[in-house]
Amino acid sequence: MVLANVSIAQTQGVPRAVFSEKGHAFGLVKQGEVVVHKFAVRNEGTSSLILDRVDFNLPGLTSRFKPTIEPGAEGAVQIELNTTHLTGDLELEAVLYMNDPVQPRVKFTMSVTVDPVIEIQPLPAAYLSIYEGEKAEQVLRVVNHEEQPLEITRVEPEGTHFKAELREVQSGKVYELIITVPPGTAPGRYFESVLLHTNHSKFSIVPVGVNLFIKRNIYANPEMVDFSGINLSALAAKPELINSLYETVMLKKRHDEFEIKSIQSDVPFLKITQSPASGRSSGFQLDIGVMHEKLVVGEISGTIRITTDDKEFPEVLIPVKASIE
Image (cartoon, rainbow, N blue to C red):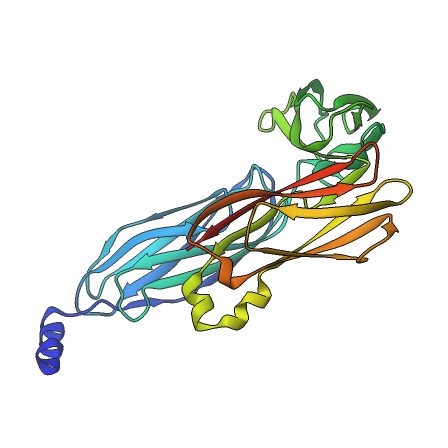
């Protein structure tokens, strides 16, 4: 039977893809440019080489190719990169899937440095972490790297938990964007943005992220415990893997100390220990593990309920989710 299969494969033939290169450096390019490179491929097999698809690791990448390359013929995988929404030093990957039995996948690697036209400094987004009741402000610089003057015609907040103000520093060249979080903003994490409307032909709208973390006077970090992807078969084969299933949560208070009176959960397989184990502290570490014998298949959601001696925050709730297969 083995000889028969070999004979059939030889009769039908097999494709074999040969590439002259699998890497390319685009070098320094101006933001907004579209750069292109072709990776040549030759079919040195005895049947048609079928190129299926190309997957990418970053947005802005696209591909073009002729799907079928006959024996002895050549083709190419053309990779295009639109740099409109990219800046800085980037490492790019494109994975080609095809019917070559020896190498069904081929990874192309590329590098590029995108010189920004309109740069947000020091980072392309605002990040503010404050306690409830506090007021916070962060100043970002908007720098125009072109000779043509840049006019920012309008500032449009996309969110309700901050205020945005624009101040011109150098006419047509440098602006300051002031992001302010007013006191009284409700606790939580907010992922919002502000849109800068400009007179630039290519960059008429420049988005700037606004990431906020408003903490309570007693808060948990992280705010949720996630045990997604527990595999019972893998645990049965290697019971020691249970030791890698744990989460650490820090419970902290802004001022003074507090005491944890009790920790309970409606998720039956959780094992929770605290440090320090007793007494008052400005912060506690909660080590949350899993008891193998109590795991059951399914989607789980629940809560860790922590009671304290703090009059303002007598109870802290931490959501829990898990998926077990």
